Image (cartoon, rainbow, N blue to C red; front, side):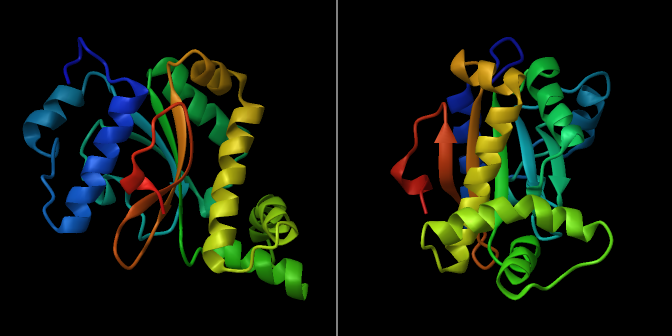
Length: 213
């Protein structure tokens, strides 16, 4: 892929999945991580995807997707909760940097989701601004409970789905880019033990069978 031929949303999604497969197989290529790439990207950035993920220390985006400098525009918060600053950052990635793909990345054993389940089910409270994180995850947990979901992975998937819906509902910039075919939004769930990033939901790309959970 050259600068003259920017990736389509499908191209970007396929590149991301290919990198994760290399990581899982233990055969990473570590692309775009040398001095030449550092020099190349110093004047400007041209990432092919916005990665909006959980802040968990085990979800280092460039590692688990085997990418390098200038490849991913990364935004991370605990539990991938989205406020105005997050929405603005994602819109910057799409509208200004021209990223054709937005990824919401959740994972199993998510502390934010677990804390929210405890708050909903047991009335457990949290102090400080952690309470704000729990409040933003609560709609996802309530929706999963209302749908009769009981497994941890079901609550994780519900929160990823809810985040994708929230981004598209609240950001006209993003929803119009998806409707026009300029961008796609996908939700992935990362498995800590084996390193796989499995598809939960997608808007604007074709889904290979091997990508689904």
